[in-house]
Image (tube, rainbow, N blue to C red; front, side, top):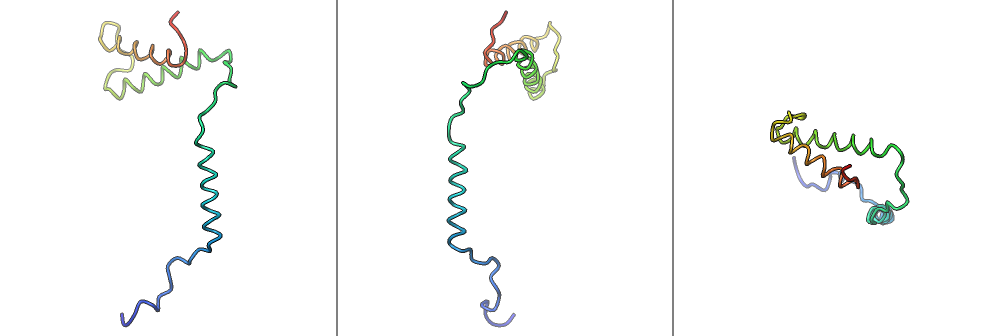
Length: 100
């Protein structure tokens, strides 16, 4: 270890200005495509939507019950049964369904 640090080669080579500008422009283009609101109006419901919504809500409720430390399928006489039923109803209402 004698002398100066100028004898060492640089760890990263300097990038050309054009490469930096190109990378910046592609980043801006990529991020601009992610900024708009999604449009769901072109979608229509298929015949299997109620089954899919039911399955999705069942999975979400199972996860919520597990994270809260409750049994996934509580007995009807327990307070957790009402809690599970209410969470499931909220999920189905969010998906646009009403109770029959």
